[in-house]
Length: 272
Image (cartoon, rainbow, N blue to C red):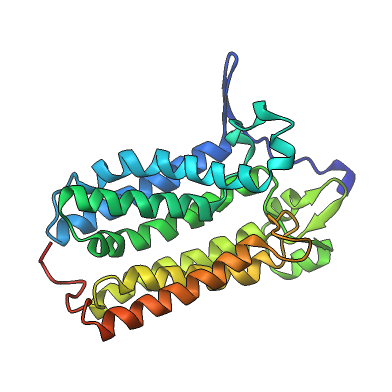
């Protein structure tokens, strides 16, 4: 039966010489839905309705560049020999940590220029970011990438997965862990949790920092299953190191801001 399994077509649409890939379509859908949610919430929190539209006009392209640059840097042995492949993001190769760092810096600069609270923007954006990540992982699914180590078909069937996911995890004669799915589900749970936590009226900045902690915990464990990790050394995965660092920084920032009195404002406060 396995010999007759064919992967899903990664191309969404062909218009003459132009090919539009599912990878880009799915990431675009995730980004659009995330933006709509952020815009709606920003209006509730007293911001102008165009605030997040203006922000993403800068943040999304800069985040994509950051995600690609991060990936290319840690795969420089390959890209230095194949520079023409650097721009081929439709084949995958966007490192989310690079994108998040670039988006974080962009958001901080934007907030300063617009004279807005960066932490207020970050809190509003947090559920949108993790939802975009949850959706975006399905782009990896279409490309048959970001998967884990070998497993049996019986293992995948035991997870009660639909047939199309099981079949797509059959790559070059072997079934693999659908780690894209594990992370997508983890992020979706995180999205729901952050939406519910909004009502808890956290101190400003702590909703975003909770996102950082939640995402990093999941990424640390899921990364350990993957076979395509960017490596710092032969045995040290970059994403796991970054996850630990981000958890430590997020916890430290929460504690320092509380001790120093920097986090008196709360999420539901109307101040800018």
